[in-house]
Length: 161
Image (cartoon, rainbow, N blue to C red; front, side):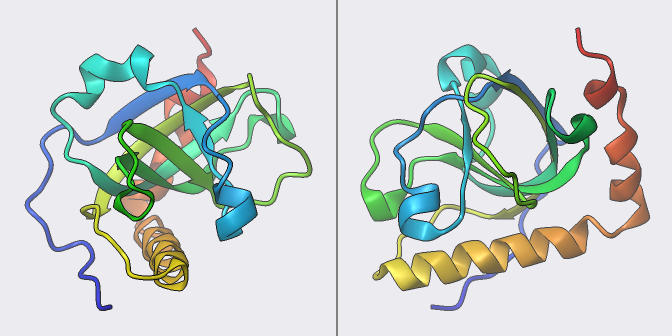
């Protein structure tokens, strides 16, 4: 399955700023996909989410209290996962870094800078995993641009109020 990435109408709401305590998700990211995600509670973010297209985004994120609050590249899914027939909207963030432990309950801050692709369905789990890994690689390349690199220093990550 060939997926087009990055060639969509610009999204007016970018950048997207999200923060919240990491909650337990469906338990599929690490276990089934090998791609751990941190889930944010959507109930607290409904106002921000109402005008945002569902799909996959790239940007930066950090977890308060972990590894000196370092900021890492991330890929973020906002919406319903059609492969799993989800009925609940989710925000699932994959920080592109290996953490030694889970961080449920910790505050995660994320800035979405670009739209990778809309949600789509997949015929197999393998297709889904390949698409996610391709999304991650696409996002990492986009974040190499100087205008995106500087966002790692955004006050949103530093001023914890």
